[in-house]
Length: 518
Image 1 (cartoon, rainbow, N blue to C red):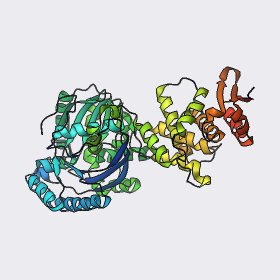
Image 2 (tube, one colour):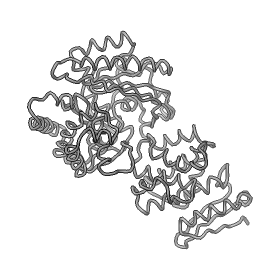
Image 3 (cartoon, one colour):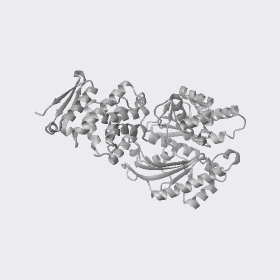
Image 4 (tube, rainbow, N blue to C red):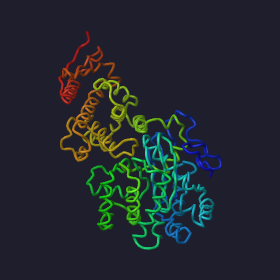
């Protein structure tokens, strides 16, 4: 494959392009037809089928087999025999699943194990001859680029060093201003480290030497490290366990270096089988954690990041990002996902925008990061209407905090979820979600309550457009929440609307005032 120009993503040749027909013919496209991607790695073989909003695709189907294709490769130069059988069986199944779903050819990418093994080309031919699937083998720097693009798909503002660990290699890439810049590959995958002669001391010295070389190539000015790969995610899940962290969503989970080092020490001192059972980690994955932990320890020592972030997005998502036109890349993944959810799940698609316009005067001008969360909440406010009324508030909260949404930090998830909880329920007291509220400050909790109660009032005030019925005006200096009714609004303002306006005013610590039309 031809190397890419640094900082750019030129179109791949028709020969290589695994997608064939471009997915995004229309630069303004929001919808994504169902697309299947297979990642044949050194440790796992995974099939993902994407669907939904193009800028923030949903995972329609996701299946992984821990085949261990690259185990022992450094010693034998060949694919692991058992791994070959498991990977081949998985690929046969994936081809049949794709056919059953009617999604056309799968996009199949193979990384370190297949590209380095002597029998890699023969395995490629066997797979294509038997299943019809074409494995596109990519080199290490291309793997780094696609992985970094996957991070950018889910984390548009990401700036720092991407570190993607697989079974036989570890790739680094520098991302800044929405672009992938320097990138490099290294032999620091756990399978490869298992073949380093000597004991733990020799392995640690080898890791230190390799990472020192990577630092010379990549520089050490990166404030953040973004971790991609199953071994990193296993360590992050263990960090959650040690800390008693209340939200078990790995994407955008953030760790500080000091706390991470405490977790690495904690892993070293505890029984791996016990940790595995406590966190639900597979035995195949947990077996690689100690070596991955040694690599992470040296990454922290060498690069000195201020923050370590977990990305669930990698190569598979990077393949989609590769084809996105610039206009689509610039969109907010969160808002795109919420628009798609409203369009497919709400009773009145399009009402969320009108609801947001109606309640926005309560806050006036707000920072962009807060504005987007308010927009997202309004778009999602009615997407759980089919849930039983007794559970609607909890379903709203659960859907947002545990949803596979991008560009949403953990505190932001809880903020939007709490606002939606108050959309359906006045009080949060006694909620089983109370431990999650600790991720917010008291001020953020109060803001979420106000937002939720504003949506609760506006959503029932007028079915078509609440702005046709009245106008909200909040005067904090006078502690006054004013509702100016139109003639139509005067007829709509009944006792339930009055009660919900009063609840909103109480959340603002203000007095409600209703002005009738003249």
